[in-house]
Length: 113
Image 1: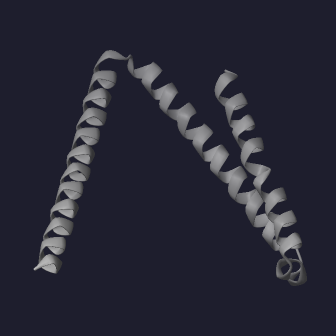
Image 2: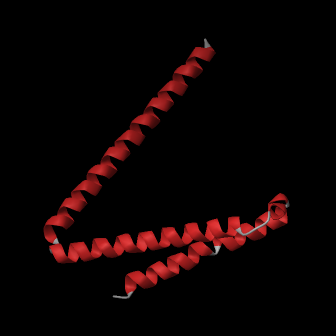
């Protein structure tokens, strides 16, 4: 009797969590859609295009530089360095330096006309 009551409570909790997640996802998508429509109707086409191109360029720059830093750090090390914990930590700390560097470069690209 207590086991079935526990399962019923678990299913109720899961269904309420699922309902809240679906509701939040639907609300977020509707809000995003509405804001995009408002921006597209109020902003000049030239300004909208320039902003879209600049934002895409910044995103692509950040992703490319971050991925290249990780890829180069992984390729340029010997297999023996990956076997020790300290060697792995050194490699990954150098690889993670690419993320703030690419973010800084992306910010400079975005802020400079």
